Image (cartoon, rainbow, N blue to C red; front, side, top):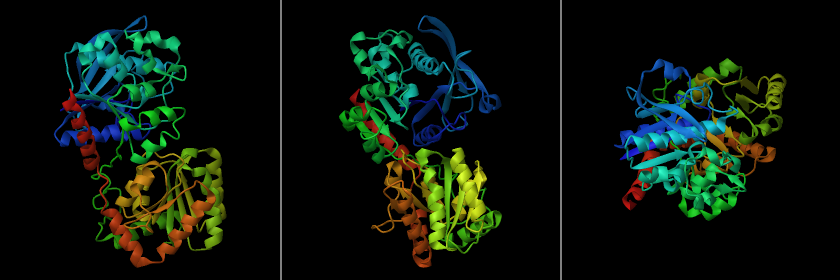
Length: 474
């Protein structure tokens, strides 16, 4: 089965968010499962392309409006990422350093999609399925099915994955001339709210669309920046599949970033040793429950509630709880957290910025990971934490709801709360403090968490099953 994944990001070539992590992992595990999976993305003038060897496998020209552009398709020689990697390079357009935020970003991603289709079409390739990710490749399904230029590709199934439904890539009808020849009777498929909306077009035209968690599929019909009715109408076409994590990287038994390795059988001793090193580094007492936060200090993550919740909890519980924050973002939140660090140095410490090795140590050494997110399509941090026996404390939204069961419920192992509020966060902190005192129960819950399967093997199989349900329809 030959699959092309189209994406603006892919780790480690270019990463801005979780999209890159998914596209950098899913094709690898699909290849291991026997598929011939490839990633196609724009060329970025970054470290990866300079440190690896690429072959030019195709050269051509195409029209972007009235402008004829030359493009190349480059293939990484050794498939070192575990799958075939192709980069589309357009001098002056797709050969820059950054992924986003250029004034001609619309033209960049339109050209990327057109060049992909021209390459596949003119080179005579017939993939079994094309898998598009987010709005940057959202026009591909429409063009495959409703442009005479690509009639040869019209029978190929398409799957579209929504990693964040808040971003649509919409633009005005005055830019329609950028698209190649299309069936003008089908332009309604491009339209949403009086403009061309690539995300909406993809949902309308693809054979199936997926979200990165089942709960997020439901939430899109409630909150998706104006596409709520579309997701309600098309709900039967949608499938929610939880993202996976690379369990080879996130493995407490082999993680090279940890001073002390451990397994589920040795979790008590292993976590204690890592916690001692972590607490010594940040001047915190090792005998108190350590509640951590790792992530961007932005509204989406609910981090604006952290300062007030931490201060109230320290006052409520006296000297019975500690907090450690790793992150950066909103200046006001950073200042408030640093002030808490000065006011309560025995109970709170903050690292402004990001440090990968420190993140691994926190996952291994902390007792709890707090995630009060307003929006979390899937979330990975809670899965990382559980691999290291650290209990997630999460708001019930998106992928957090789908991956964390409250320890008060049957088979549960985490802490969940309903609202992004200081009150709800503080109640959860109180529950964590009380639970921490029950050594026997928390050790049992740690072993339960570490036995859970959040691997990409599981997620890749779900995608493969989805592909197989579509391909026989040809």
